[in-house]
Amino acid sequence: MSTNPVTITVPEGGPFIEIVREFDAPVDAVYRAHATPELVKKWLGPNGYEMEIEYYDVRTGGRYRYTHRNGEGEEFVFNGVFHTARPNELIIQTFEYEDFPDAVSIETLRFEELPNGRTRLVGHSVYPNQEARDGMAASGMEQGVREGYERLDEILGS
Amino acid sequence: MSTNPVTITVPEGGPFIEIVREFDAPVDAVYRAHATPELVKKWLGPNGYEMEIEYYDVRTGGRYRYTHRNGEGEEFVFNGVFHTARPNELIIQTFEYEDFPDAVSIETLRFEELPNGRTRLVGHSVYPNQEARDGMAASGMEQGVREGYERLDEILGS
Image 1 (spheres, helix red, strand yellow):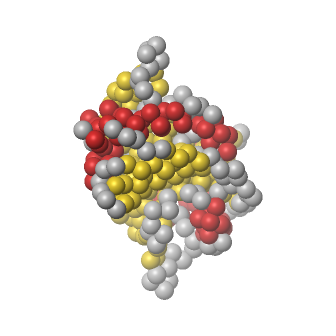
Image 2 (spheres, rainbow over the protein chains, first blue to last red):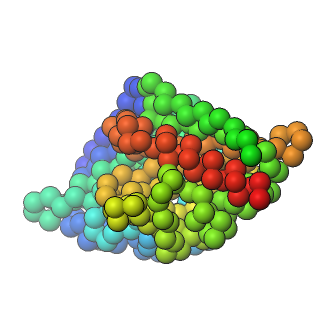
Image 3 (cartoon, each protein chain N blue to C red):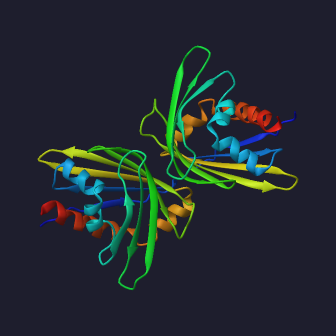
């Protein structure tokens, strides 16, 4: 199936990363794929990584913690809390990579309904300082985001 | 009793507010005054406001929601989640003023032990965009922070 491009913006003068991506699927299906651990596991992160979820409780006040493991057995552990989870509309969550403890970012993810049963996902991440944002932008996250959303396309199309 | 000055920095070129304040009390007492709802109620916010706590659960993954009510009966409701609560060291929490829903900031509060049983509190707040930060800085929050910490001095001294 076809996929849509992802637009990642790393603006000057602010500790932000913006990610916009459209999906050829209705908003409730895109939200469900973000809020259901068994589905998240199938698409989040770069290709070739295994995702092991300790907990992933997408509701206001819920928490998550998971490990990404690559082909060499290296592990990357992430955790956070869901400040807001409003089905088919909005997720606001914190995000911590445990190798950089206490440098916690906050991410707002808006689910926008488009005509013809399509969806636009608008992500806005805010880092605790400019260095943390620059480090994330330089980490190869763009590839991980692009590949993850391509796998999400496959899940949504099947 | 004497009080210490509060230093509030609103930097150019980033959606941050920094607040530094020392206390003539040991770090465990200062932390306890932040983590115990019955104590928080006595000092958080400007003078002349009543604080009504719906819940205030200072632990990693806990949530809070409270109302500040002024002399005219106006109400200001706030909520958030605690991403991290590490006793006598660190609190990282989200913060939402419900009249500006979904504009969620994240605040890191470090409790630093100083010689002679004193404590330095270092707060770093990050807003979702520059406008939200500027709005908060213009809201009269400086007075509220200063008055709140003066009441905290009284609690710590008694």
